[in-house]
Image 1: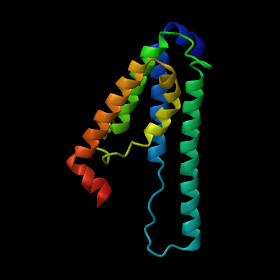
Image 2 (image 1 turned 135 degrees about the vertical axis):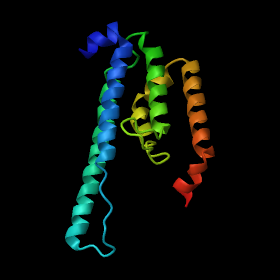
Image 3 (image 1 turned 90 degrees about the vertical axis):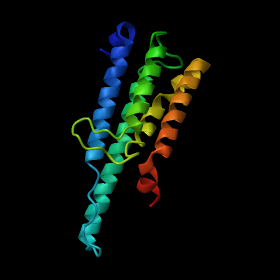
Length: 164
């Protein structure tokens, strides 16, 4: 299926990649271990918390591996189809938008500013295609990343969220 979509509808293929990665990422975020309630936890509580943290870390590593496999499906040393290059730029721009957003689409609540920045690590698995692509693709994404970072740093909540 992936091979067919790659040739006939590269945008749809990358949309499927993004949907899958975002769903897995949201599940990872939802599975974050709860903070311990006690200031003096028992050994059993500490062991359970450490196990939950380890599972959470393993889940993120699995997500990164999934992104690597998806990225590798696009080609070996070059993108297997020229139509993939512009679609990939759009894919990465959407990933940047998602990583820097704090809007939780399911509810009216907003997430903590910067809470999705770890999604950038997932996106980085696709970075090799941009390095190998045309310089203007890299410039477009770098400019977008710089704008998102500047907007984050100038947000009034930035100081409160990260520096207090």
